[in-house]
Image (cartoon, rainbow, N blue to C red; front, side, top):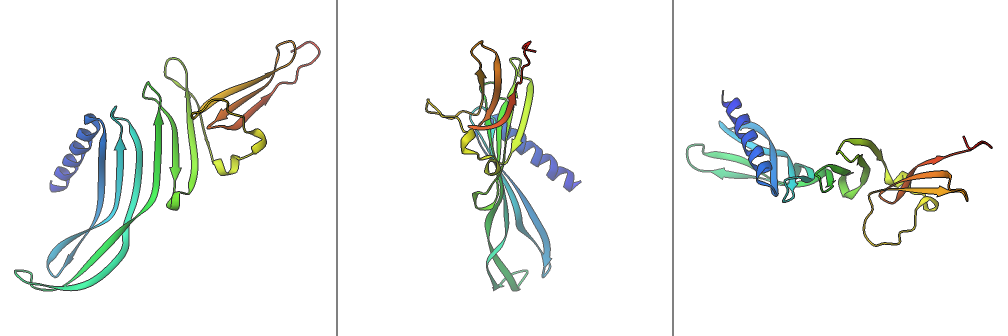
Length: 197
């Protein structure tokens, strides 16, 4: 019964933070053990989720708290008198997700980082006029780098999704490129016969 109550309180706290818009929610995972008759909780992992003012998740980071900074024994007086082990822990980032949304609230990109800001992958979603996801692509930008395929940007700012068309002198499409975060990841080349079919 106590476990169910803890779960309900956690769900209530999480939903309140989501509804309020903006801010941060932290979920902590503890290791519970008994030492000299006293129940002790040590934090093992935590997840920190940040929300923008519209209530959309902007990033989610998983931390490990299992890196001991120091361990020492202390003598405790009182009801549970005795020698106790006291540990101090630091946290280390394990994984971090960063999210971007469009004006309609649809998630348009997700980026996954690892320890030391190692970029694992980026993912983009493309939506139609009704807000339906029509395309999703995930790639590793480190493997996708090809300077010859990079378009030249004339305008400042960040482009997430774009398309480029190359035409012949008659206006027929010869090549279609889909650009994701300024990398050309999809190229479609059209070979036309003499009948333009």
